[in-house]
Length: 439
Ligand SMILES: [Zn+2]
Image (cartoon, rainbow, N blue to C red; front, side, top):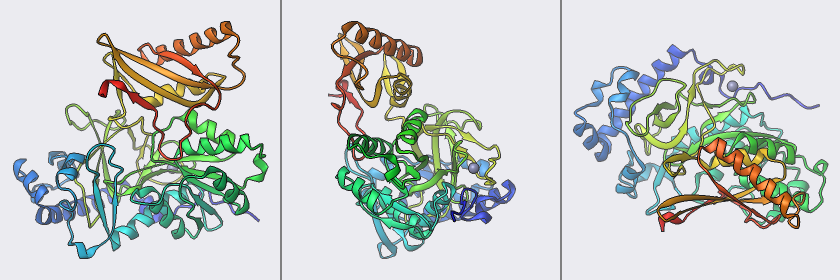
């Protein structure tokens, strides 16, 4: 007999708190966190002094907006351990960001931090319907990156069976997935598509797979991509959110309603600000997500600027959780391209491509500046239904995609078709943008 886990809540006491009770808890934890960082982290003491504020001035949640922000730059300037609020002997784990530019950022975890982390991952796994009956296939790379370990301990916490396969070697992934009867897939959404591609190319039937649920994260992805993954792998695809500077995965995750990710507000305060002015925006407005940790011991962060663009909803969710939800992120503001003065997110282009029959979900964006004018070229992989030998059909297809892109983006883009299966397939985070202007 199969048990329906779709309405289970991992920690009903904390996930269903009445808002006044939640806010009381947040304020208590915030005040304690501020005292700790003020007395133990010189960078915060200095920041608060410069802002002319002391932890005792914060008497309500509304006062939070008076505190200065923390940025990735602060973590870099205090590399490696300057932001830690506990002595190294209390730190039991180190993780680090990928550090695509400059020095990476280093984060530490105390024993309690690791417990909290697995508890919070267990919350979103349970919300996605994962239970002790599942076999969880973790295809994130194990290492300094927080994704694999975060999901690993959360899955063990809910009692699931973990397969720590790590990234790479797609054929072996598929063999193990089928032989070991994996029911939950954990990876980036772009790798899920790579796996789907390979399964189809091998001519395997979907019936051979026991996959039921996907827990995808670590890169922004569109609703269209979700539908594509669900249809091709025959699973329910869910989104979750985290970033290593704040904790890693487990900051927010979707319930099966899949209308935004519940933020674990008893551990994090979420604000949305105008990225240009830093001003806090009213609920429901799109802006940059800012997070304050409430329980972290090793490296608490106050008003951390995530660069992720989203909006918050405080409407009650029918799953029973009272926690606010954040919309799927549109991408990091660092990923945003400015083309002829217009803001463009790669996920917007992805949405358009997924709606056009014949486009494969593999694409690349090439941005350049020619005679002082920005150009955007979209390389699109097409499937066999687009005949490369029929120029007229091909032209009509390009026109159609260009027209749709122009109306969505408000800026023109040139489309170039590439042969089926010619684009690079990704085993981790997808590299979709080549910005030649930065060279
Ligand atoms: Zn919900």
